[in-house]
Image (cartoon, rainbow, N blue to C red; front, side, top):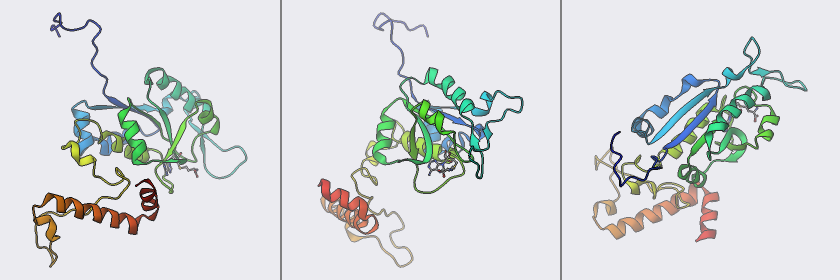
Length: 247
Ligand code: SAH
């Protein structure tokens, strides 16, 4: 506090930690799983920070309604453009460089490459839909990037936001026990990861592959590489084709 020694440049400001802001109708869902384990420890240690914004707080009518019936008819409700926009405007004023992303099954599927980019940035601003989703015009007005977790439909964007934040946060410096443990993982090199084994060495009549007990690091590495390739070839022909093209 008082340590303003002459060696300190006057404009020195501490680097802001990676920050996630989540716009949601269900603030109470957070931090949820993000408060546990690796992500939870990182949150306590101030390696990253989390802010939730209650979209309902931006509703202007006396019923505080955030959704309405779809024009053209059909089932379900749609989140109103004006309400979502007001929430976004408020957040945008202080979100700086952080990208604004709408979690949506129509979005570009999330992958490890994109997760790496996002983890290397300043953080995320995530919009969680509910019901049938949000009015198309608000997506257009803010040129919101849409990101999907996969080809299935969730009942809301919150579990997707949590998964996305979790994937980014575990890559932040200081989160994972060993800096190496991220590099060999599935998708990092375009392959699925090799299989793991630990004690007991004998279990239900099954033993551990001999090579892993050999202490021969080169042989172990070669075995793991071939296992990763085999696993990818048989389980994910799409990844394997892309890997072969690259290598
Ligand atoms: N009617 C929409 C689905 C709405 S599901 C459609 O058919 O495309 C409600 C909300 O859940 C969405 O607004 C979105 O925020 C979230 N959601 C559902 N599936 C998702 C997925 N695969 N990835 C990311 N978010 C998803």
